[in-house]
Length: 414
Image 1 (spheres, one colour):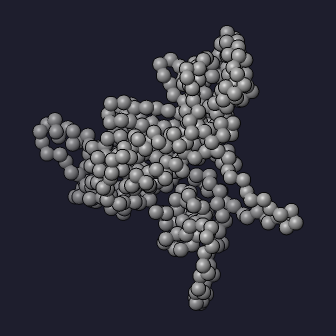
Image 2 (cartoon, rainbow, N blue to C red; image 1 turned 120 degrees about the horizontal axis):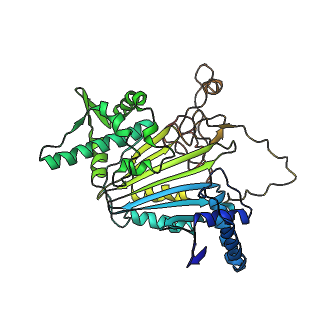
Image 3 (cartoon, rainbow, N blue to C red; image 1 turned 45 degrees about the vertical axis):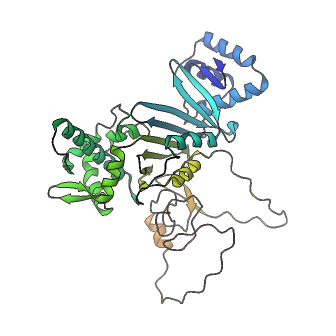
């Protein structure tokens, strides 16, 4: 174990020994390798830690704590064309403050360093070639997760058929047989980062190959038809213009980013959000997966920057404004826990504002308005300057500024 510039360089056994020496146990989200250090390794790590200057020892302890027992953990993969792939682990712990511990494997050792979210954002925007303008056609829809992953498999199937057609000097097919899609998805764990399906599979919490595609196929195809991404064509299916825009961008992509963050809610249930960003010469497309809901969209570079900045933000929440000790404390508002993503939200909401999953049927019935004669609507009072954003569909306030779905009507937040 030693420092090379700002990088702490260590073997997996040395990292495990260090976590034990500083008293940081394995957490549920631990990113430490599962190895057992020898007594000689433990003695070497102890001597290394003791000789560090106080400031560097604090930094070292914070990084070890982050990978041993992270409060939030991330997996980041990105490619530059088809030439190489970079794979990075991100881990955050209160000890690291607003910074991530950036961890990657080089040769035979692990490299750890502290990286500010702004620096990570700058690197990712460079990967997306933010200095080159886009001219994509706006598109956005919300789907079941199985539907969006199946759509990724459809693009994979058509791209493979196109390459075979080129090699055989024949015309590329424009339709596909849906019955072969389960076999395509069951090969999702293939190690080949050049294909978006295989690339994104390595970022997901579970491989697409373990999903029950025989049962999921029909409803997923119907969902894709309903969102105008594919259309029936005889016994086969073909891409619509919107679906073809995604296919063209994925076929000619220049770079791509796969990013997943994992955390635990108060009930110690793991929650995940995974995004795939694919940059082509003229387009930037997003696949965002969280729980049973997902989104497909074409983005502007500003959209991508805002999304990544939100995902990369870490650190303690801003302190609340001081409350007068003379005033009685307000009663805490009742909260509901989403059964899919684990987010906490108001009891009055009928869908989860984070993943869009409907609330329990009995809760929806409880909060439904009783049947009565409609009353004339009163004029809405002017909103204060610090009022939360409102849904463009139903006009009701969103649960928070970062909500992806309206908690009242379920509409996606654009």
